[in-house]
Image: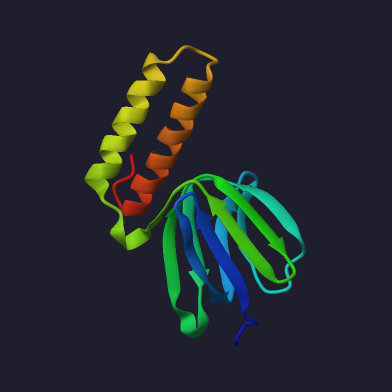
Length: 138
């Protein structure tokens, strides 16, 4: 059964990564996983690092590793604003492991309850999630 398509945009600080119609969007918010179809109720959600799946016509799935960000759904459109996105099949496990190691070192060096420590912990969670998507999760 075909679903009604709707417009999805994926935007990062570097620019527009995706702008097309999909039949479904799947991701994880701060309160749990979510699937979005056309005519979804208006929504604003905080996104967690995870796999972003965009189901296009013909059962094709575009999979991305998404960092933290926001999801806005309104007027049969979805906007995904994220700090970092990689196409899932282009993830480099060794590079991600290096980034994870650097973030872990920053967590250990930072003072407790500092913004530096919170930022390093967010980066560590992001790269742990990306490594799982790459097939080398801890």
